[in-house]
Length: 141
Ligand SMILES: [Zn+2]
Ligand SMILES: [Zn+2]
Image (cartoon, rainbow, N blue to C red; front, side):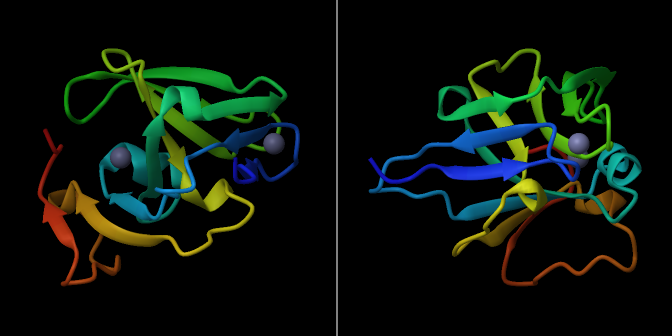
């Protein structure tokens, strides 16, 4: 077993691990330009590592959960640190088997790269989108 990836919020109250098989270490990140990610980040959106829920484990603290109807119309749970406000991960009500971890909270980004951008139709004019990446105007299927 490779050492799991670790991450935390800004203040360190919340810590987590991401375990993945050595054969397929997580490397592909997805940037989301939806209006909700803009509000929660205070920036152009979020950069995320989508992974199976059973590979993700909170090892310290309890994130606060905010439930919201996403731009896609689906119910989304957004988990964040109630002390420092860092967004940690999100999960769709209808897809409990997956979580979307905010890549900026990882302690080490390794060889990760943004390979897809979603909700590009609401991207801020100052957000950079690599033309070589996959671009989806709204929610991918
Ligand atoms: Zn915190
Ligand atoms: Zn988003």
